[in-house]
Length: 178
Image (tube, rainbow, N blue to C red; front, side, top):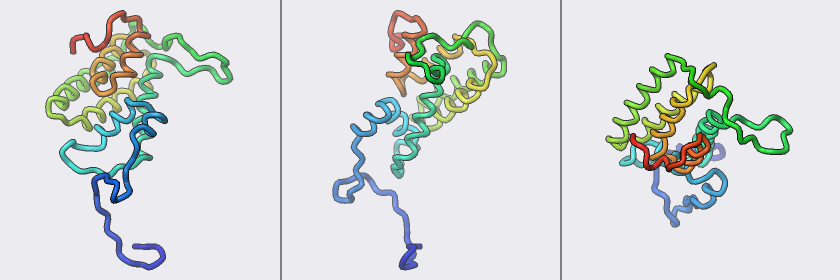
C-alpha cells in the first residue's frame, strides 16, 4: 500500500531501460566494488534465463564473500598498521580438517555440475557455504584453498589470479586443470 494514498501497489520486475530511468551504470559498481563483484552478483541473482530485480544493496553481500575468500589467503592488517599485510594467512599449512575436506569435495562436485547447467547462482551459493566454514576452521590446508580458487576462478578471475600468484604459483590459474 502507498503510505500516503493507501492505494494498492504491485511490484513488477522490469528490464533496465533509459525510458524507465532504472539503469545502473556498471562502471560505478566496478569502481566501488571491483569487476569480480559485479560479475558474481549478476550470476548470483538467479537463473540466467529469468528476469530478476536489480538491487544495488545486495552487491555488498557478494563483495563481503570475496573479502572472506581474500582473508583465507591474506590475513587482515593489524589495527593501526601503517603498511598492508603481504604475508600469507598463518592458518594455511598441511594440516586439514576432515569435515571441511568432505564439504570441499561436495562443493567441487556441485560447482562442476552447476556450471555445466549454467546454474551459476547455486554454484556460488555452495562456494559461500564452504568459505564460511573455512573461515571458522582452526586449521586450513593450503591445497584446500587452492582448489577453491580453481573452481571460483571462472566466475571471479581477477581475485583468484591475484591470490594464486600470492600463493607462489608462477603460471596463471587460467592454465590449471579443473
